[in-house]
Amino acid sequence: GDQYIHEEDLQSKHGITPPIMFERFRDDIFALFTDKASIDKCFDLLNSFYDNISFTKSDTSSEGIEFLDTFVVIKNKQLITKPYSKSCDSHCYLSPTSCHPTHILKNIPYGIAHRIFKISSDSETYNESKIEYTNYLKTRGYSENIIQSSFEKAESLSRTDMIFKEKSENKPSSCSIPLVCDYNPALPPMGKYINKYKNILQMDASLTKIINPDNIFTAHRANPTIKDMLIRSKLTTGEEKKKRKWKHSVNERMQSLQRFYFFSFKHRKLSYGPTI
Image 1 (cartoon, rainbow, N blue to C red):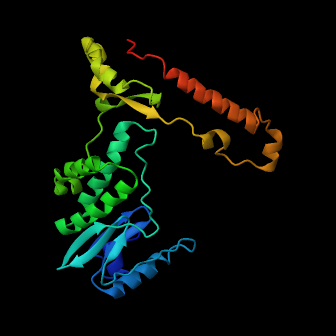
Image 2: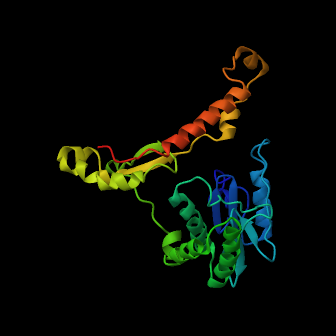
Image 3: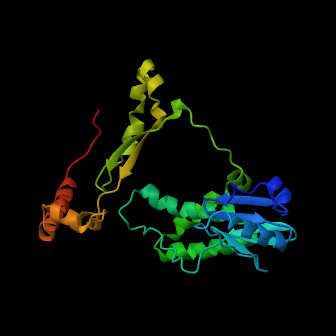
């Protein structure tokens, strides 16, 4: 859409008053016009470029208009924003009892609180959304202490800095080096051990120029689920199915799945420690 939206072309070639604001995220466009006639003309212009691409529009009602996860209202000649979600959104966030690293389960309430605080234009809107999303998180099983601390952490930040935060340029010396391993609750805190022994790399000045110890961190790879083991992600045609020879039947796969769980259970009994 923004490929053809140029103020000079709109006004000189098409007789359309340019929008005072034009923003785009992928295929969603948010534009502010001073008159409805310009909206209709611009809408018809966008749909005239390609036959196989069709744009739709949502006119501003007296209540406002939604854009992505934001609801925008014009009040006292100012744009007022608040969080928005579709009626079909069940807010089915990851359960805190799921087999995931602890920091992920803690970051989900904080990510929600951060987004709510950033989108809400005033304190009244924020407090209403805070109560609403707190109930969503409680329904999913999150404790009230984690939820409360997440919102307090978000409130301690500056909303202006959130919106106008400048992107930091990635420098070659700041390349991250992840230590990727399969996640298992029986594993020891790998990040703790890595941070403990990072100083070993700093003993070699030439090695420190190549590898910055501060950029080394742990990353967890999700284990395959039962669905991943039983169902292939790639669809095959009839001819490919005839050529393919299955090595295991469903029963054999379930037996291998059983061996996998016994294997993991036995590993829980092992004692782990840092290996340097």
